Image (cartoon, rainbow, N blue to C red; front, top):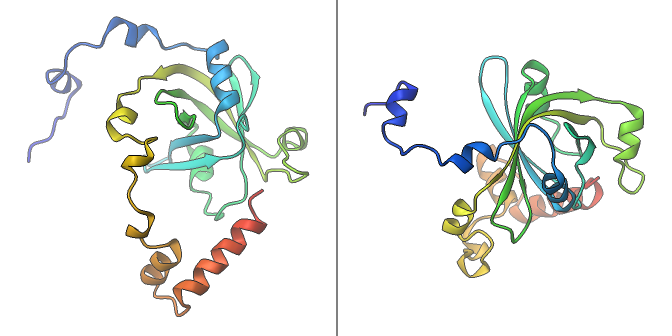
Length: 204
């Protein structure tokens, strides 16, 4: 198998980008981007460490959980997770981040690229608290590029159409997966109960 090794070689396989696709990129958060962020409960964060190893992590919370600090700055609270800190450690080493925001039922997405920094600022953590529970840290992103992404990927995948969703029982539970992958002695039922209990107690 031969691989493409240059931008010119890659571009030879595609038509030129439409003028609107190029011009739609903004260097700041306009009213539409702010409105999208206010309604979005979910974001995917792409990052790389200093050696170029990539990672994408999901962050979800109540709609509008990402705070707009000004026209070129947003803040994303870090809620309780597995404490691997893959994304946060990447950002400490390499501040470049790519963000993809989703709104359930909406096929278009909001893309934001920028530079991230991690802070444990007391005031910002208090501002982003939920039911009195503050995030451990906050990812502050200086915005460099903002643009709306078209709907084709979501239309092709029928992501929001429940008629296209597979039966959940066609996939094993996370407890079953962990039991197999880690060769754990507990039963699947016990592992699933433990996960459910953890979810209830450590959501925020």
